[in-house]
Image (tube, rainbow, N blue to C red; front, side):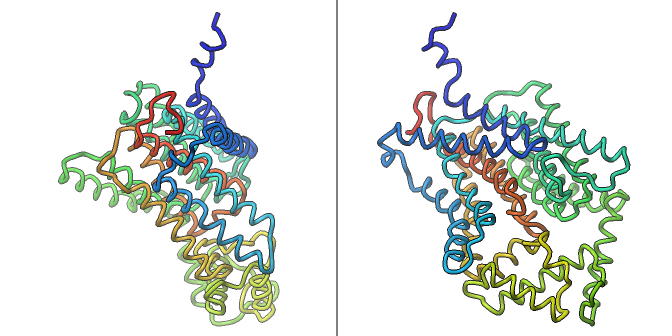
Length: 430
């Protein structure tokens, strides 16, 4: 029988952080609530940890403060733009959830996390998405989606990201050399993520693939430069060839090019009842967003102001009527959406988040520890996905979008700091 003290040693702070994070990510594709519960639980644990450790100021370093600024930049920009005129509580809630990357960072920084177990949960999660996609495809569904994510676009995009993250299980760089079973779980998770992405018919997310390859190759590729460059070039050449030779991919790409050409060749205004293609609607959104930015470049038109601007464009036939439906609260490009609604102020905050975040993970890369490398790559892959996906979708289309980025970035940044500080078990908070 274990005494109470012995039991507390069996399941320590690191174990609890791992369990909570793993459960949230493990059920990501099955239910919307698991990740939210995990994020709030880790944030609450961080608050209790700070209250318990009174000498927080002595533990807080400038590198930690940089992460705080990166995570808070865009939520603060949204808040300041909404305060004067048009507070949109639902949209603000989605953006503000990025702030939870701060307490998650701090609790993981303090106690550490078993990245192997978290990655196993990620691989199992995307495997469930792959099985679900296979069942849907066998029933004749052309573009699959999931129970937690009803739209094929984010469903396929996040499946691709989770599949690529599963590949990190193949590396033996962190914690200990992994068994063959764990590596196979990573391989199966990767294959499942690729299949789910293709089955969802999500073309925009494929833009992230070359960046995923570059990041993984930069950290885990062969040490011999000539071999590394040769294999990398071969991979980058093979990608378009595979896309061309795979009907499911090449047909979608050809369709997209044809739709773009059709829209760009338009010389007339939209008429009532006229149908538009998927790519045509996106290009129409981007044109409207850029026109809005030009009309108010400093702070944008705001959220209510942009809605009025768009309504006026539709009445004049300059934009398609579908742009005013509730489905399109964003412009399927985070940069253009931010420029139109928040202007240069918002774009500056977006640069702090994206460019600052990438710089944060790349800093002191030569001083890498083995554990730190995994967290560093995980963070860079997440940022690559966030940026690439945001070119054709929104970071805040659903609350779930914000939550998965928050969890992955919080874990990555906190784990990297924990490795940098070389905290020992029981030394939380140093």
